[in-house]
Length: 290
Ligand code: ATP
Image (cartoon, rainbow, N blue to C red; front, side):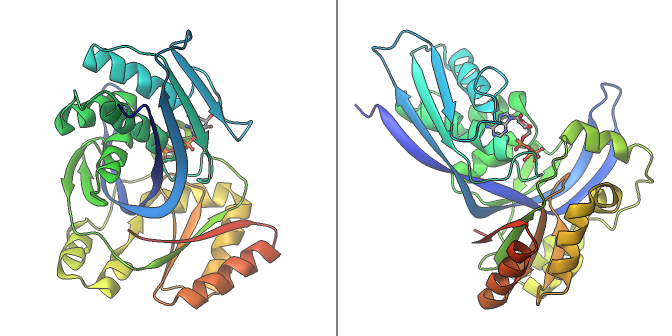
């Protein structure tokens, strides 16, 4: 019986993200097109049938909480509740995805734990149950579950958890620029309350994705948060300026920020931009849409 798995948990970017309203429960509704990228956290999960503690979680980044505050820990709890099974597990997370950067780092770790525990336990949960279990943890988690299962792009409606898989944007090189600033997602959504809800609509972007029209995708990308959040994050705004002056085909803040991403047809141009960012004291990773 397999007792240990190491899985790659991919980050996501939003090719389109609009806030469409706020419900009485305080949750915002969105329209979003999510795309996975090849920037991965590495999550190791061991079924430790001889262990005492139910869940032991460790992480190579000291700033990340290692108890119940870690979304991956909570994913293990949700898996046990949904499956009715219980066994001791050890989880180790090696972070490569910037923390609180709008790339769904915690969500993808949680999705990786859900999917890996399901495999280690003999697949007691269906794909549908994994997706609804993910939604209990956070609205980015269901998409991350899909990515773990090999579906790397989707339209997300309602809170983002009602998903329609779509054609991915393949083969674009992506520079992920981190300023070191962090943005809490609830804080970012609060900032959006004062902003009019006008947005261009996702139909042109989805149409371009479907037609394999990369330039059409790049010219219809949209993130409602960018205008509101970037002015509050001066270093991220500086990253954006550096990327805009590179040979990028599109530059945009990712999710609720403040990570800034740039997309390139030409891989070499991406590496040059990453070097420029590093020279200016920022971290930059080069990866691909998957
Ligand atoms: P999203 O894009 O889904 O809103 P994010 O990428 O902006 O999320 P995360 O990296 O998930 O943000 O981190 C948000 C907060 O969650 C962090 O400040 C951290 O304390 C906490 N956290 C909980 N679990 C994790 C995890 N596995 N990895 C990173 N941060 C985590």
